[in-house]
Length: 105
Image (cartoon, rainbow, N blue to C red):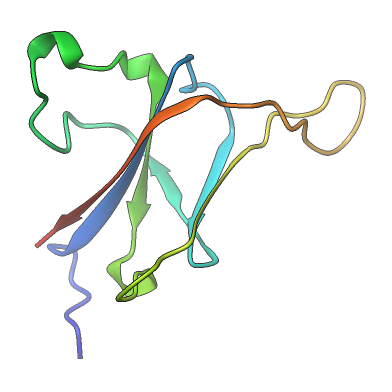
């Protein structure tokens, strides 16, 4: 049985062309909703300091390792910005530059 202790984990990070830190972006992996988290540095070493993304263009989510499976994993990302004048959400586009999944042990 896998060890579910907190020292094991994963992080999903989205980087967009535009500022997305304020947007209510929903993310899930394999039908499990991910919890947003405050970004804490780079997941991987950047190729150069000039390549560092704008922190306002990033969103990060905690990933429970038990939701991941060998092979293909389904990642779903939605912009849930409230539609003006009514209920529901608009389907505004977010131009993602990068999706990173970091596994930690």
